Structures are given as C-alpha cells and as structure tokens.
Length: 62
Image 1 (cartoon, rainbow, N blue to C red):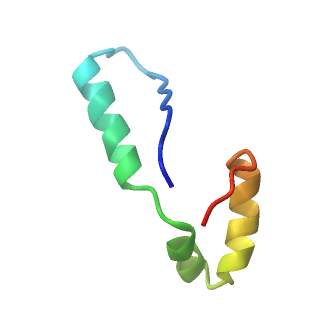
Image 2 (tube, rainbow, N blue to C red):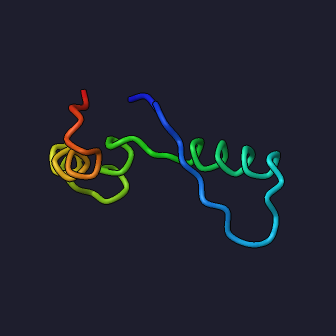
Image 3 (cartoon, rainbow, N blue to C red):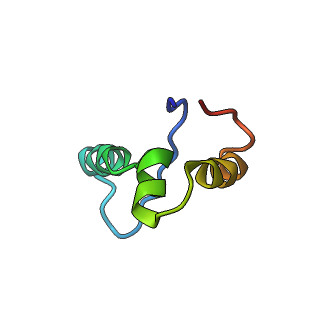
C-alpha cells in the first residue's frame, strides 16, 4: 500500500508548515494494516479487506 497524495486541513490558529508536516507524518506512522485491525477486533481479515476496499475507492489491495 502506498500513499500518492496527502491533503491536510489546518484547525486552529497556527499554520506553521513545520507543525503541519510533523502532524502529517505522525498520522501516517499511526496507520494500521488490515491484518493489525483484524487482530485487534478479533474478526477475519477478509471482512476487514472487504470494508477497506470500499473506503479506498475500489483500489485493489494485496
């Protein structure tokens, strides 16, 4: 899975570019794979992948 575009929205008063980049990388590092989510929720991985495909815009995942 790769990231091709990132769009951020700034809430609050600060528009410091360093903070925006730091927050973006922090969010990317916190992403979980479908396997990790299935393990946490205690469901089958295929169910997670079905739902993920809906939110990923139909992009096939391996």
